[in-house]
Image (cartoon, rainbow, N blue to C red):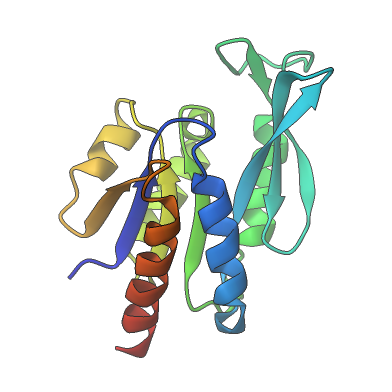
Length: 175
């Protein structure tokens, strides 16, 4: 059975917007998860913010951070990210579904995240996540799973995909 819905596509295409809208549509199911957003300074992307669905936010990566963990020009606050993961996915939370934005190269720098994402995908709860178009190890392994639907988001299908995913999630939650 397919219960893990993964969105991929070019950066800036609207994947995060879809995840945020879906988390609002299904807020009555007490979803758990997080989303990312760009930090721009003078019109230039300098890093990324990470926030829980309920507003707890912190800098995830930035060009000016001091960290030994990097992806490209961005230095990653791995400890801060893992602390956010602990609060978002604490075992005592009762959730009906998960929203993850994103399964990407930066997030996969964390072994804790890699273990956690596999636990979540293996759970009985529906998962909606964005995933990098390219990647090795965890990213490519997840894309090969039989229990996922991988949907490419484009400017032409973005609005339709939001409607389709809303119906699919509703069906999964009613099973």
